[in-house]
Image (cartoon, rainbow, N blue to C red; front, side):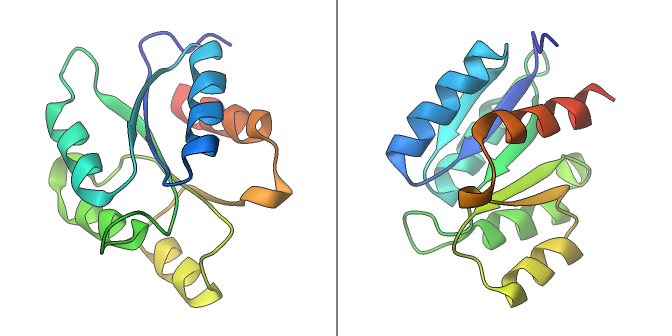
Length: 131
């Protein structure tokens, strides 16, 4: 399935994983914006255009800086234009309490990095944003 004109915001602090995930997403036809922290993610969201809106977010829990993915998720759900944006939590480090908080804020799906291959995650994202 081709994802031309679909944009993913990849918010991941592990630079090696970010590079590999970005490459796989691009090969799958996505436009990819990247960030390693909440301020950069918010800037990317503010700079996205009507012609190329962000269609989904790949979100890690622990990020560089003082804020976590949970801070970004909370911001998204209080912003009317981003309340329904699909967010995929992809992490190994969030506690069950944090996962519960993310679930209450409406994440689409939670992936444990070590349990899923990149292609499985990308397939799920593709399915959700194509429907």
